[in-house]
Image 1 (spheres, one colour):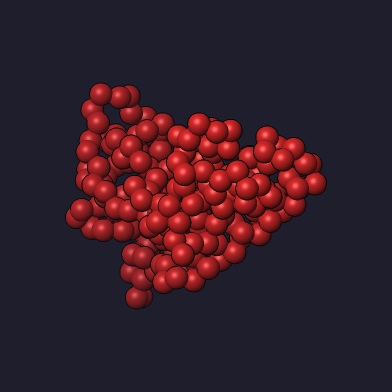
Image 2 (cartoon, rainbow, N blue to C red):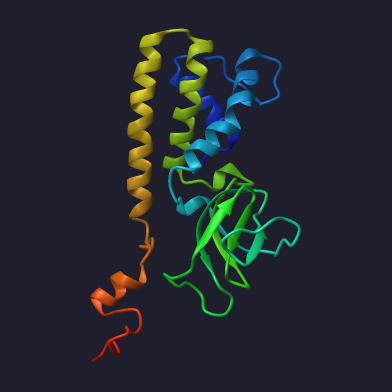
Amino acid sequence: MRMDDVQICNHAIALCGSTDFIQSLTDNKVSARRCNQFFLPSVERILAEHDWSSATALATLAQNTSGPIAEYQFNYTLPFDCVKVVQIFSDDSGYSPYNRWKVRGRNLQTNLDTVIIEYVQFPEDYRDLDVLLATAIAYEIATMLAPTLIKNPEIFAILNGAKEKACAKARAMDTLQDKELYTENDVWEDQRLRVGGTSSGGSASD
């Protein structure tokens, strides 16, 4: 079953061996205050670890002319809900392995004059997340809750190991779900393999 934010937190509380469940992250109880403190940082840490299919989105970026630019010609403001950039595309040519870009703070810099990005985002509804991803987030929250809810070092060590297994399982299953994985190419490697264009010695079909 897909879980919302409260259900993810209650799952984390249960993983700690506690029954101090919550109805809302704003409940006036210790477990709710701790969940409210740890929830978003835990979500961001797990989302940043992988290009999750159920947490990716596309957005057309607007050029930002107010900030300084180094290395590249154009500066673009990233969406407010962007955890990390997966890939960038041009409106004119789509994806190219030769697209170069760099994230600086909340901006993306590139030589492309139009940019669409694929990115991992904070979800508006946590029920959109795959159940294995939501479970990995619950384990991450549980490792943060355990020291204050149950104060048992053995349980913390067990949870930390279980979290690593849950994250690995979620990543493995996500990778199998019809994902096209891009490998960043470079000109010299393409010329060596005689793909991706022409070299100084002639065309790739010579």
